[in-house]
Image (cartoon, rainbow, N blue to C red; front, top):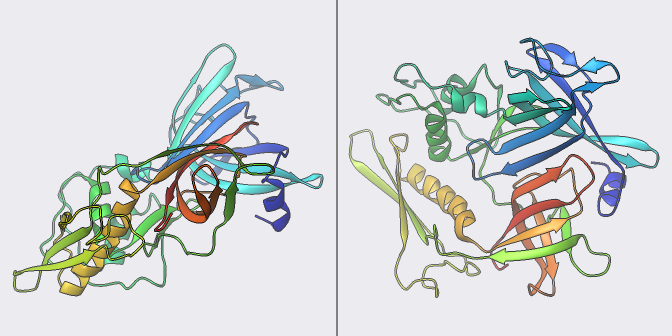
Length: 361
């Protein structure tokens, strides 16, 4: 987003949606009329993105009812490219929200209701017909599990390595992909252009929030609510694997962050509360330790303090983005938090998010 658009979206603005439908490489429709819609994202789900749309059944003489397999809103492989427009000084700046697979569509007298999911649903639904035995490296294994449904891009910061012989996965393609990512360790997300980006696991970059959430006069937040839980909280992760001789190896990651409420030796528990994880992809102690540290990072998202936020719609945000939180009612000033879920309306309205406070928040 441009600087001008970032300034506009902190208050009231005029918005528009631009949606096109594709079937493979064929453009079926380039300007589908959107009456209403909601995009939801939850980074804890295997397929984080969900989308619902309402389209007029007839608009300017065109019928949008899905009848034939090649109709723009049919659910036979059609994918919607969605852009969110923000009026900046009399012209629209378009922000790509993503590519979504139509999973269901139905029509009544007035409206076509369309349900979509993120492109990882292609992997989630494609079960393996026979046991899968990986060979080669982690990169080639990810490509074998995902392509050609999704094109894989691998961040240059990741180090590829050979997959040990003798591994076998049953019919769950998504579970196999997740095991590879966890053991690497790495994370994968579908980009706004529909590519699967495999990248290092991070919890945001302290000091670089993309948005300041504030209440009071001139603030961006309309309403807050908060929650905490011990469910799913751990202060250590034990990762286990096997070396080349078949002997069990172990790596442990401890929560030693002095600002973490779950830190070892802190008030959360006088004892170690471990989470156990094992994978045959882990063949050295260093790999076990790296996987344990990564899993500890992701587990903190389960039980850390969260705030539910209702605010002005911001079409540039996605889960994982870092925001700063300032709220007198919540005792926070410039505290860092990561977005875990969001619900973005595709018509004028309010946006809702759940943000997880980072260490010290």
